[in-house]
Image 1: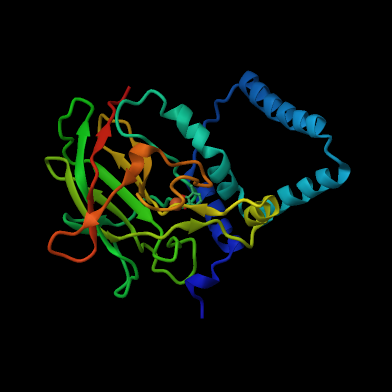
Image 2: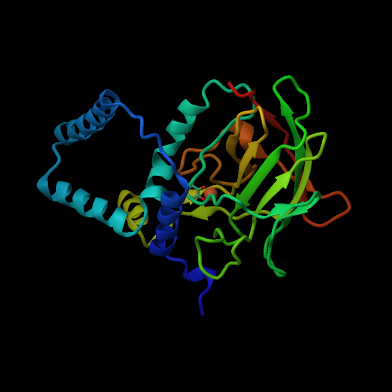
Length: 282
Ligand code: MBD
Ligand code: FE
């Protein structure tokens, strides 16, 4: 039987690689000058490390073998999103005045099912985990409600696995598209996700083990919030008290993004309110 606990790096990596190829359209407009400048700097940075650290042939060959394995395991999306995307996000969102963004990571899937308010994310009858009511309002930078904003929410389950990237989970489990009401308000019922561990059996896990690093991201909700006339924001929200909030391997936590849920009034589980502020389109 296929279960979540048999998720492998190669399977989730292959899924993330295939997804990326399907979804992404990148600018074919990068000029020769820009390619030369960026590629030249990356190559020089690597050469500088070789010379400064007096890298041996054994180390060079281990590096070459590891790079080959990253591709074989489908882990280029994972590697890049864990160790590089945070600085790209910092550049992209540096002039925003509204809510803080964070990295998208490798496990977004567009067109998740549309849910009515109050929403409940698709989940199994016996979905493990603490129930969480996530609610709030979407506003613009002037403080006015943004009617009908679209909130896309996706997150890992109580074992830290994502639907469509680990076996044995229903297709849209813990993924949904929610339209806020006329006042920008939304209410979404879900479960609290578990911390996420980088797969230990792939190339990224091998690097982490060889370097003696830890392999954890704090538990997180992934979100994309958008509305006509406003800039889409991609972000993540974390949970106070999670030991990895202070040392996320993907360097994607910001203090403004840490939630402090409270026991749910008159109900099970916990609840938390978080308001999004969208920047106008430029
Ligand atoms: C994740 O769940 C994630 O959000 C990122 C950024 C990288 C790896 C796994
Ligand atoms: Fe994630």
